[in-house]
Length: 162
Image: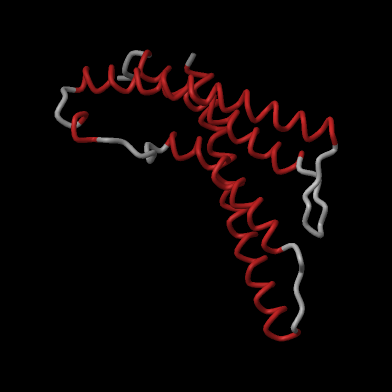
């Protein structure tokens, strides 16, 4: 079980780094668009569209890493007043509920991605980007978040390491 938790953590770390790279790429694309417009009066015609795809990718790919580091939004008012055993139980319930929600999210994103692939759905913008690619990135991020919630729950079920 601990090896599965470690694998989920490694996957979350990897996607966190990919999200960081996408953030740098988004920044570069926006700066390039600004410079191109300012100095040459031209546009890439894709900067706004791809920045949106990259930002969605960042959100989905960084979600598992954020959970792993304990940085998701929590309401600590009640939790902080509980003793550690009850905190662990509350985390377990929250983790199971989160896992159920992410299971539904993965299902919906999988259907959306498969539909885009089946029907060859493309962006209506000038790039005509096949939407299966940005949808697949969102699906991959949600799938890693699914494994991260499993690891989160497993940590609460495993005995404390001495």
